[in-house]
Amino acid sequence: MLLGPPGVGKGTQAVRLVDEMGAEHVSTGDLLRAARREGTELGQRAQRYMDKGELVPDSLILDLVREQLSEVAAATDVLFDGFPRTTAQATGLDVVLERVGRSVDTVVLFEAPEDTLVQRLSGRRSCPDCGAVFNTYFSPPDSEGVCDRCGGTLVQRVDDEAETVKRRLQVYLDQTAPLVSFYDAHGARMTRVAADRDVDDVFVDFAAAVGGGV
Image (cartoon, rainbow, N blue to C red; front, side, top):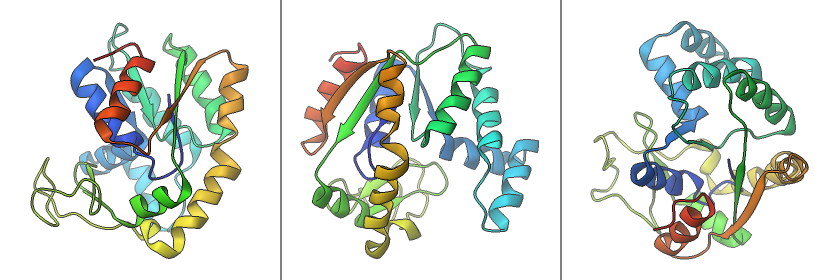
C-alpha cells in the first residue's frame, strides 16, 4: 500500500518497482480509464457519473478493484497506488481483499516538504491514454508534450493548476493522512520514505521497504 500526499511521486516509483519485480500495479485511475476505453459494464456506469461531473462512488471503485484482483495470480504481489484515499475506502477494501484471500501487510508512506510538492504538482503533465506522469521541472518527457510510453498528448490536469494545489494538500491532510493510523492499528508494517531526493535514491529505499532491494 502506497500512501503520501499528491505530488510525492507514488505513481512514478510504483511503475518502476512493478517493472523490476513483476508485481501487479493497481491504480484506480488506470482501472477507470481502461474500463471506459473498453466499454465494460462497470466502465459505462462510471462514465455516467463522470459525465455529470460527479465523483465515482466508492462501491463502484471497489467493484473495479475486485474485478482486477480476481484476474491476478495468488502468488503475484500487488501494489495499491492512490487508493484507498479515506478510512471508509480502506474499510471497504479490507472486505474486498478478504474475499480474494489477500491482506495489506506493508505500507510505504512517502513524505516531502510542502514547497516541493507544490512545484511537483504545478509542473506535472499526465497522459490521458496510458496514465504515465511526467514533470516539466524534474522529469520532463523526451519530446515536450508527448508521452514517452505511448505517444499520447500530455495534459495538465485542472487540479494540478497552482491555485488548487494547496487545497489538494489540505484535503490530503484532512482525509488521507488518517490512513497512517488506520494501518498502524491493523498491524501492517509501516515504512516512511523521504521522497524529496533523487528518484533513484528514493527507489532504493522504496524497494527495500517492500522486500525488493536493488
